[in-house]
Amino acid sequence: MIQEITIKNFKSIEQLKLQLGRVTLLIGENGCGKTNILEAIALSSAAASDKLDHEFLASRGIRITEPQFMRSAFNSDDLNPEIETSFQFQNDKIITYNLQHDGKPYSSWVSKISEISEEIPKLEMISTLFYQFLEKDGISPPSLSKSDYVKQQVKEHIMKNPDNLTLKKFLIFSPENSSLQIFKEEGQIQPLGIHGEGLFKLLTVLSSDKNQDKIKEIKQKMQLIDWFKDFEIPDELLLNQKNIKITDRYFLGKQKYFDQNSSNEGFLFLLFYFSLFISDNTPKFFAVDNIDVSLNPRLGRRLVQELVQLAKKSDRQVIFTTHNPGILDGLNLDDDEQRLFVIYRNRLGYTKATRISPPKPLEGQEPVRLSEAFLRGYIGGLPKNF
Image (cartoon, rainbow, N blue to C red; front, side, top):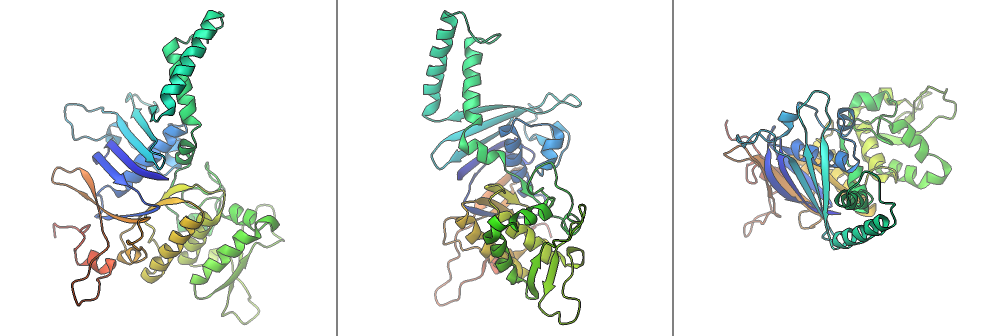
């Protein structure tokens, strides 16, 4: 897992350090920089994949804008600073991405990747010796100097690093009812696109005989919806049909089921989240922006509790953002793997973060719920100008 991230010179972030849990929840005012944090990680994910073209950035959940607007504008002396992100992993390995853009139309971002670990000096020494051996035999790598060859070997090592591979699959999920309801075709990224594309195909795969345990677990979790009884993928679907049969436990007449087009948003969003967390084919590290969308506050609280347990069970790491106070009550801050941060902008406009500790009740009083502490302004994250 990633223990700590450092972001420099990205949008409203001049410099920010954040120590992540297995489940990290970000709250704060509109425009304080919550999504900017997620986008900085997604930009690093694109760098880890060596795919920094605009269409690839958009498919990862990044709001595409002109390069100068993606950089921090706080330093008036340098309007083109590098964007830098660093990730410290549990093994104390640190991988850093430096991203630059020349500002020309149609240009892509370019990145430099470096790693701090005990392995790199050894790899540099081995690569240097190997190059010298090739040079001696007259078969040195064509058009590469010794230093460039060593850099290339180090970069290839980092790109194949398991930690880097985890980061490569990072996405900012922001499911939309339109994509979920019509079971939109798979997107550029599979099995699930950031808005819910590909959900039908994933459910079909999970419904196969060898994956029955996964689909059963999803159905069991869907019991959070009071009226839900079952769903299934019909056998008689035509090639281009994408429908599931959903059974309402209150239906007693001839109409035994309905399809996703007639379902409510809450059902579809839960189906998406549980599929995302339970499938073995989805990312191990990802974010969900505005986890509260379309959910009753109490259902949202219970959903977060369920997703925390699924994250532990399947060894995933996730970042949520929310504006709904009820979501906060789904966290147990006495568990160090669950963390809550208030994101805010200081008097200079920089995005900053404060970790919230478990609330301590006054003597003889009941503890205040996190949702209530949020609404009362005890922990911050609310507008102060009105």
